Amino acid sequence: MAEEIRRCEDAGVDWIHYDVMDGHFVEQISYGTPILRSVKKCTSRPLDVHLMVERPDQQAEYFAEAGADIIDIHLESSCDIGACLKRIRKLGKTPALAVKPNTPIEDAYPYLPLCDMVLVMTVEPGYGGQGFIPDMLTKVRALREYADNNGFPSLNIQVDGGINENTGADAKRAGANVLVAGTGLFYASDMKAVNTALKGTL
Image 1 (tube, rainbow, N blue to C red):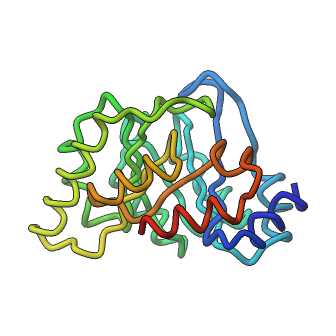
Image 2 (cartoon, rainbow, N blue to C red):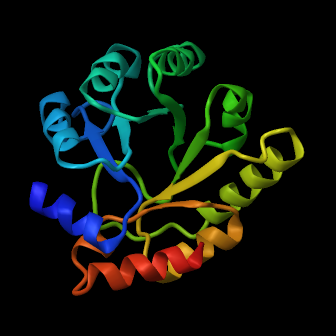
Image 3 (tube, one colour):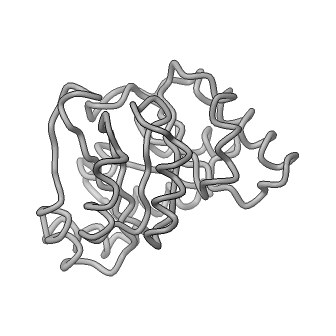
């Protein structure tokens, strides 16, 4: 993992996106806090921790202590979303809100005062290598328009799922400014070239 992180750094990535899956909110199970602590030792890049878990309110503090810089919680989680976002901020971390494909983006609007970023999932969370869902661009456009017109022009809009040079450019045109690339980056024959192309879309 340290070697892959160095490869990302050499390619010029800005953040490391760290997916956490609990086997309940999504079917798969992935990394926890011990691995995050190890990752923290390997990089100075900001760690963007995406909590795909049923109870992020019970997990956020542990991941903050383990080295997370940004903590994304799902709007669909079983907790008091507003209170959890406030807690993340109080812990000195950047709060972010993630939204699954079937959730209306309007449901996120009341929480914009409490977070610095909204993650619009462009695939169903839980599995890598899925195809980008083009209809999600409508949500990105609506979110950017709402944010710009209601006092949140600096809101980061992140997209995650099926991101490559083409879908990244589409997402940027819709209003996104943070792209998460997994399969499209790690399986590329030239990671730096792909990352440069993705940044070019921004």
